[in-house]
Image 1 (cartoon, rainbow, N blue to C red):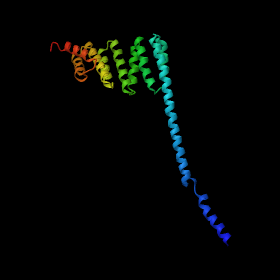
Image 2 (spheres, one colour):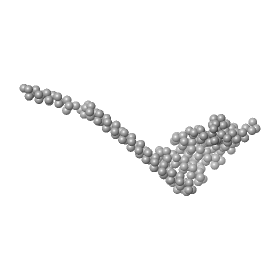
Image 3 (cartoon, rainbow, N blue to C red):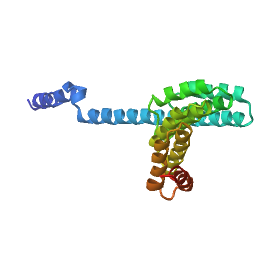
Image 4 (spheres, rainbow, N blue to C red):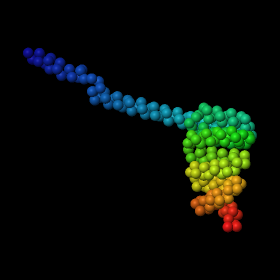
Length: 219
């Protein structure tokens, strides 16, 4: 009798353990949760690591392309910069390559192409530094083409996008020059006055003061 009771008891106690679904077993739940965290963390690390490697490769190619442009080999530089843009799309280096490519185009008398490409780039809402640089290059291209009013507007856009006061002031001085060339005296006064009154300490202030004095001498 004792033996029967003992056997029954063992059988009774063992049943719940063997019949418990794995997903209700706290130990296994913990193991699964930890495993999921590890997998997620590993995936995030791979993404970050891959992104860093991609950016590093892109920056290396960008530096090589800029060095090629500095040697005056604009044809090869353009090809190399386009390769950076296409291969490493989405990286900071690719955005910088867009500016470098269009700077090369400006130096190679391809201003119209540069303007079109830069305006399309600005429409993608790039980071402020890149947006400012792109607008400044548009301004330079328009000024080279003697479209002075369009150049002034582009320079003002460059100033608005810039995230550093000194760069804002420099682009506003460029805008003032373009407005003067366009015969828009009041707009030139406005931007020069903006530099003098709102960017004290900027290296661009002395030039703005001189130009403002010239424009208001007869007032």
